[in-house]
Every structure is written in C-alpha cells, then in structure tokens.
Image (tube, rainbow, N blue to C red; front, side):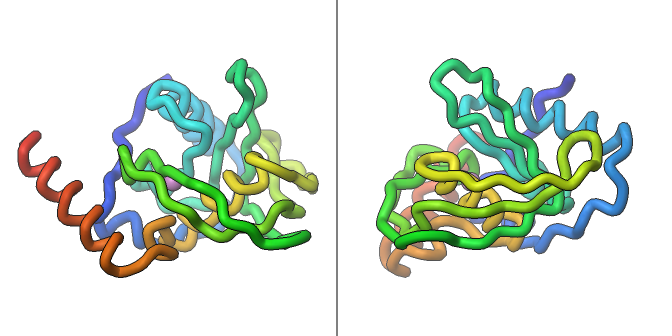
Length: 167
Ligand code: NI
C-alpha cells in the first residue's frame, strides 16, 4: 500500500468535481486501500479521493476510537435526515483549523462497496457528519466555504504562508 500526498487548501485541484466510478475493479480497490493507508497515517477520520488528486467519487471513513471500523462509499448518494445543527469540523486538507459548520444530524447514504455491490445505510452522530463532509469534497466543496469570508481568507493566507515557508 502507498501513502498518497494530500492536497492542501487553497490548492485549486480541491475544487474539481469528481466523476462517478464506472466499474469497481482492482485499480479502484488499490486506490481504496491507499486512501485508508493515507487516512490512518495522517491521522484522520475520513478522506475523499479528491484530496489525493484522484477525481473519482470514492470516500473512506473510520470514526472509531480503535481505528478498526473502516467504511468505504463509492458513488455515494446522500439524503439528509433529522435536524440541522452546528458541529466543529476539521479537514486533512486544511490542517490545524477547526470551525463550526451546520450539518444534518443523520443521513441515509446509498453507495457501492469494495466489491461493487449496492448497499444503503443510515448513519448518525460523527459518522453522519463525516459522510457529509467527505461527500462535499467530491463536489469540490470544503468546510471553509460555510464560514465567513473574513475567516476563510485568514485561513487561506496562513496556509499559503506556511506552504511557502516549507518550500
Ligand atoms: Ni476534509
């Protein structure tokens, strides 16, 4: 397995809208394995293929304390359920920043699994929030899009500066 490079905001490639996976083949499964490896290594609780510059509709998630409950969703379709409420979110592509975002408290998601079979599940709590966050990535959307332009510009400036300092 390979640890992939995670794109960081404001990299414009994060704005790409991902394309549906036409067939879940070995190439897709290898990518799924690499996404998990990259997410666990980061460490993070979710990762979208978009974040490693692969613009296919694939997300991986593990919100468990023990890091032993991997979920993969290929071509996910979401339906928000219940109330919307503010939650604090971070993102591996926006390292070090956490902001309040409004999310549904539960979601119903239909997707393909690692074998290419359709499944559906209802998620609540942190898993529901994470699914909404990762699905946004597939649309080229980031959590900073929900906050004030003032805060967003400040984060953009600081991350751009930090990147320049590393180069
Ligand atoms: Ni993210």
